[in-house]
Length: 311
View 1 (cartoon, rainbow, N blue to C red):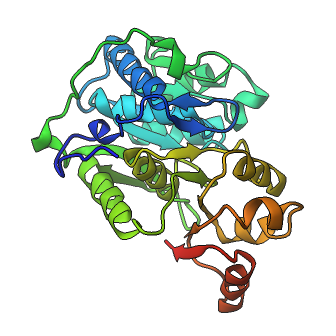
View 2 (cartoon, rainbow, N blue to C red):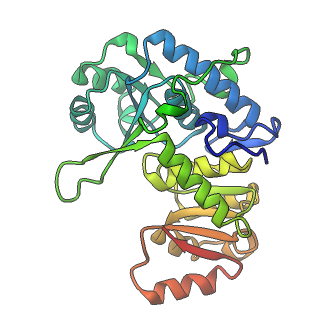
View 3 (tube, rainbow, N blue to C red):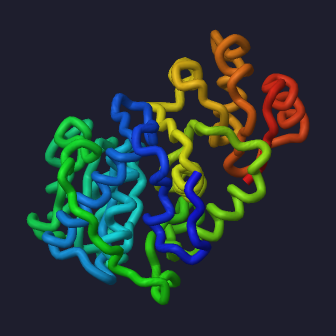
């Protein structure tokens, strides 16, 4: 794994030592580290052409995918702030959040609304007052960002080291008690947490991780970033159904996993669990906490080779 300076810039920390190694797999949208780097550089240039610069707020609305991660890193590299929208949110609710955060650009992948209405991106842009020229369709069926920018040239990050404390991403709280609140997170905070995770799990963490939580939540985003910094493979399953997870874990020999407790419990009941999951998984991160100590003990018995970490 490449050794980065503790203060090196955000996307520059992504591993570059293994260009041919798979960086992101799952959902039929695989890409190597070289593909990912080219996609980030190319999309950064495209975003700058669209007018994205320091302080620009750029909404990212879509299911977990290689395109989503490439778009996230490109937004930050271009100097913008990535505004992460729940992929299950209605167009009207999403528009309220984008208006509240004064978001001026929109990158739209597949999500709950586009599955019902292919024109959902334009509907959201219209409601949020985002100009047509500030929108980009990044659905995997429309563009593969990992292969589209094959000839992308190196471009510097818009922020220098002194600006690492500026907001790089806005994540919304669940809104279970009131309207979702916008939480601002800096490049430095994400980098610090990724470094801390990698340093503290060095003897446990493997060379691949299944991220079975949304990327618009902090655990999904942080685990993806931490593992990509260490040159590992990030698996983004198309859904969190037990049969899908068993298939992906087996196919890519996934060593680690990030999911909520309920996912681990249901996965343990799936056909093929003992044969295809137990031998592979060695580190399991739980989003939130288990409901009871008994459930935690049950997991530790079922996942015989795994160490569990509550986040």
